[in-house]
Picture 1 (cartoon, rainbow, N blue to C red):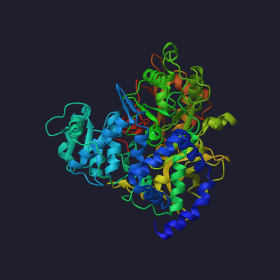
Picture 2 (picture 1 turned 180 degrees about the vertical axis):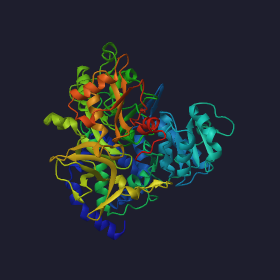
Picture 3 (picture 1 turned 120 degrees about the vertical axis):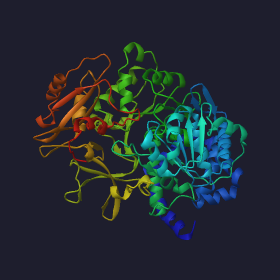
Picture 4 (picture 1 turned 45 degrees about the vertical axis):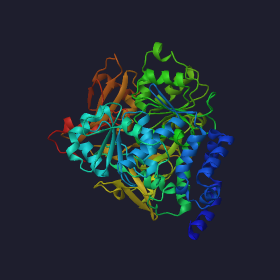
Length: 614
């Protein structure tokens, strides 16, 4: 580190040391690794790179010099511990290390070089993590392709990143073959989980031919997710520059001082501490055992597997989510950490009592929920159910975030146990900087006043949409000389720093000049005992322009009518202009398992041939 950088770090140390998040993270690592293993990890790094070089790298904050050796040392120290459980496959850290090395060497033998992108379109399974680690070691960002994408959307997502290789599950061969002539940068198609057709390569055959020695490394944090794409084409987000700056000389500097960067880095990863990292300990393996029921391509799901990446946790992967399978795995694999979306919880709680009460859930410590709004009733019901199945404490936790800002707020059991009204919030701002801004007056909102939710976080420091015509800079608002990311959300904050979301500006319904946010109406309708899911959308009206419409999915076997929903809204004391003017009962809503609802898809059939806003 040059002299200026060292002086910046020296000035920042007192502030960093005084942060609750810094002490909490250090205690989390010590708890999860164990003191003896922590010493072994650092001694192993030293033996791989030279103890003096390691010390100089740590003191000089040149982590790119030791980042790959840290990962490999962690795998070696936890060699016999289970790293990944996927279906019938059970891989120790030693097994995973050998397969990661083989894949990394295989990709290099195909000609992939640092900064070349190797995309994945993989079903949930061990191959996702093997690819992620292999790409990280050799410096290749890994775009996370959503397996629901097909045709023009998939073409756009691949071409935006100029990927040179794609690792795909056998199930997606037809979708990729259909667009092959439209993705000219892709030279290598690597098929996992089945026979590769002519012109494609077999994943397992590549591994069989490759050495299991350490590849030539040029480390990068290969995290490369996409935005949800519910309001347009998915955009590729460059985490490898923001999260990865500290660990890779390939990353672009973030444009802030080293001390400021480290502060945001600590804030972001402190969610591991707030969600119980200093408390969780499996009685057998002494580590976190993380269930991963959601799609691995989804940015929010990263919260499910960070403990596996950094803390020596065990990742238990569901290829596809089923409510009973979820409960079964918690009992069988002693799960204590999981990330879910509200739709999953709704389906679990809707199971017949004779099914959902079969399983002991006593090991669960932290159930993290995000990606879509969860009602206070759902949060309470989740706690009630898990406690009824053996949990000694409330398990529901939550964060607010997005693909662009990662995590910002954190809601912990202690928060709503102290003040039950906090069930209505998405937690306290703990992992980033988030404030409420009044765009009309150009001033920050006082506590309790509704406004635009603006954030500064680790991942917004270098935010860019790779290969997209839409520039991330358009989503920033400058206040007091600083760039704040505007996620298009409305909300308010209380005097204690807890965030309450009102709705999304792009979904706002303007009925007769009055602004209506669907979230409030959806929350009210979800209180109906027969409702599984609901989407409130814009519906054309000749007089008012647009009015609220509710598209409702009943619980299995439940009979519902439009009249019943409208009367229930009146009982919930919604004011007249917020009561849906139109209700449709449907068998299923277009909500993916990652929690995202495609409201545009719902609106399109009602607005065909009619001009609408946005």
